[in-house]
Length: 117
Image 1 (cartoon, rainbow, N blue to C red):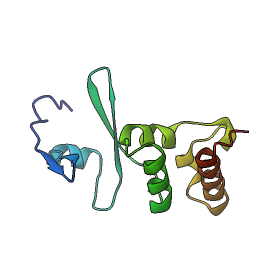
Image 2 (image 1 turned 90 degrees about the vertical axis):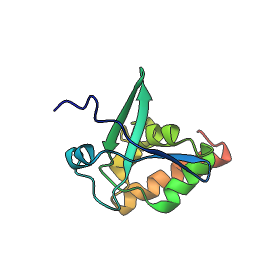
Image 3 (image 1 turned 120 degrees about the horizontal axis):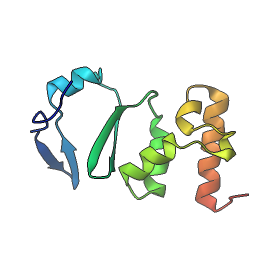
Image 4 (image 1 turned 180 degrees about the horizontal axis):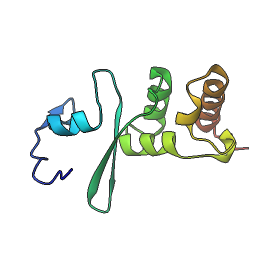
């Protein structure tokens, strides 16, 4: 499916953040429904969107938002990046079970306190 000329979308500023209203055809293609989390990244002049495979618990998201000063791109990259401290998995891979979620929370706590051992 070609998406050229479909991205004439509205951008709104609310509280100092910018929000993009995606065209319906893209929302349908990504199978987005209310409550889903959508991530975006900019690479080589392109904006890349993907639907999060897992919804990130609010406390995790808020802690990362504080650590990364609200930078959505850094938060998304951190969540999706495989890490040796998470046994070669990403935070998104682990947040759906209690053991994995505990490991992610522990890593965030170590980052907050500067403990990178």
